Length: 365
Picture 1 (cartoon, helix red, strand yellow):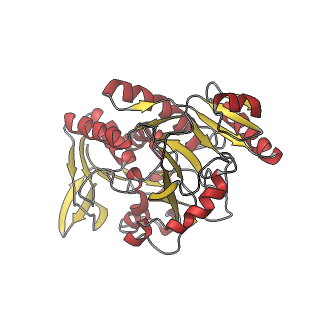
Picture 2: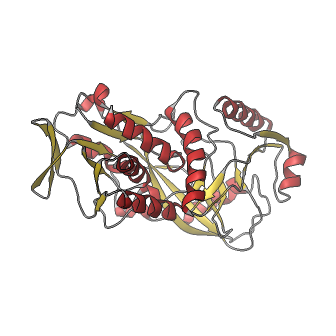
Picture 3: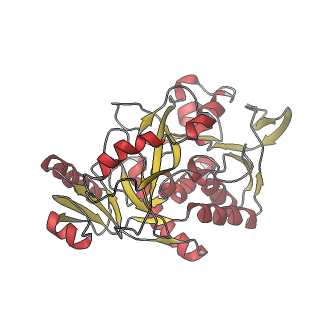
């Protein structure tokens, strides 16, 4: 089949890679000038173990499978990645109950090697830590997300696929047994279409003739800000607090060079994405200091500097239960050989290779 994939983020790349490896002719259209210019370039670069997600959900299934696939892929393709491990920490008795529930959910989801620790055991691993207990997840790690995306791009091209940059999609319609795709007034025909446009997925669905409005979930924008921390790293593992509404709390991550950074927080946005939304307000550091010092009391004054931010393409808003990934095929929207992905936020990076295979299965099915 001749297949158009829309969106060259990590999930679009993984989907195009899976389809190209199966012998299909693939064009990956991206409205910007390069790969991973949106959500995929603005995250923690964490490889999640699969702890938090409801039993049987797409997030649980694809995170666990995708994590195993991702570590193997990185080893095979020479992509920098490292299992540094993670501690999810409790600083109160109420948080200890949350952490115990995460442990139980992680085991239900099939996550390996989980261990509940006392505060003393956690501090033996990370002496700078303050907590009453913790959950140790050795399978959690970090990855060079851009190197991963470059490897996926190379594999697409090795299998005859093509990337078309600066290619915004005007509209799509299924006519005479094929998909007519209009780009800057010029029509092109494909046998199948995959909408992996992340923050733009709902807009693409609305330009797709016959795509029912009821099948397009609402888009809720949640900004996540990150702050860098100067100085020698105080921790050798990722440190996560108990989760908060809309996210996993202000956590400490490490990049592959060992640099500490903190985030993301949750800043709910009104309206649509625009360039101004990608500025980090330095005044938000005040709330970061308060959150971080609950588990790292020795964080020095003045150590945090505004770093970068991203915007999550959420499907639910403040106070609402977190939504699952949505993989919408003909059964959901009634259009043949069309797969639309909505709400691919965390753990989308970890899940990408598994999601790519699921997309390819849906297109072929």
